[in-house]
Image (cartoon, rainbow, N blue to C red; front, side, top):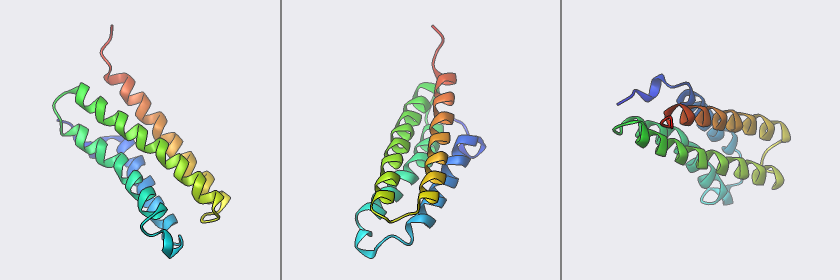
Length: 119
């Protein structure tokens, strides 16, 4: 069992989730149960799955939950694009949040590689 708080990728993904919450606070009220809810859920899914994987037994389990986090990070990339195209966020916010999501994915991929058994 690992302490998720010690992982840089968890710190990065937690920071991304906090930034997403701030960015979506100004989304239209009619999106409260639509895009706002969906983008927030996918953003919190990343650090939550990292934490859950760390609480599981063994590297294979952790790697599986990191893969789930990777999927959520890809989902965020699309949601951010949609939010920008709908005019809910500025180009600058879109670029900054997307860059953080991509950096998070790279960190996840690197950690997943280290957990894969050598053949």
